[in-house]
Length: 117
Length: 142
Image 1: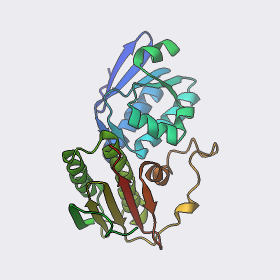
Image 2: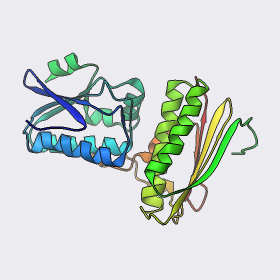
Image 3: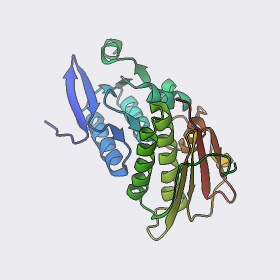
Image 4: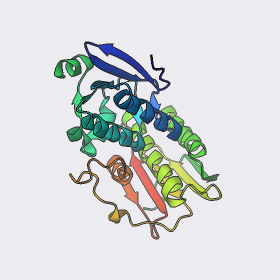
């Protein structure tokens, strides 16, 4: 069983559900570690259905967005599916302004996201 | 934008080492002051996002992660607005030369969104020449 420092990882009906331990995803070192752990889920643990639940996240920087974009590329390269859910309105506005809401499949809540796989 | 057109109730002017941890301490202090004056969550989020992006731009790009360099962080708060000025020791840049990150050919790039987010979340943004300084203002909405 892989241990994660920045993530809480569970399995729900064949979908790997990830929650973030940091309320604010800003520090460079934490973002690097977060990226490594997310990439490991795809590249080492072979998760091909991944849901990122942002319910605990109050803030994230554009550097964190960069990690999500790289994760999306890796997921697509592995033929997997990535979905995001439970994004609070202020953070959703960041996705909308940058048009990343077109790149990612963003669902309102975890139930909707699980049903969409 | 004149700095004398508002009733500033708090201000700081600090020169800090080129270290994001120290920069974020100043940012956290600013955010606490806004929260203590009951600025809306949306306003505080906007200031957090824009100033964090500006600090990282100054430290990573302007000062090229050079620990011998410094960043100047000036901030003023009035009941109606907050004004932040961040200056690095780099040669400056032309903000209009940054590619549009929403262009389909750039949408998948992991970086390049900081300037767009500053402009989207603040009421007024300017980069006085030579471009090694950014002035950010947010008028209180909540």
